[in-house]
Image (cartoon, rainbow, N blue to C red; front, side, top):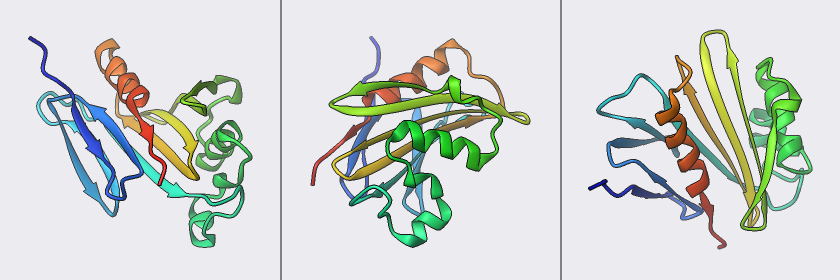
Length: 158
């Protein structure tokens, strides 16, 4: 019998996500980090969330740290994020789809010896960046887990 996924509700109640029963979560400075506490090879999945009342109207302090938030949609934001990170990821590697009437963008890339997977979603004036990083390219099982976590992500209205 398979164990049921755990559910995480963000500290502000903005979003929820499901994660595997063997994984743990730590929240540091408002950013949750999810990782496999039993069988980890080093990968960590983190979520950054911010309220954006209007496009380009994010808090100026947040925009200094995250200028990519000025994009018109999550595809433009992902392009700007990758450029800001100097990731070397090619723009054509960004994929997008619609979930719950929201546009979602996803991309994976490798920088130096680290593998990254990023996903952006925006709804109800909230922006979510989910970022997975690992010192190795995940195997099929872990890639499936990360994909399942991204698919389970829901943003709640106020």
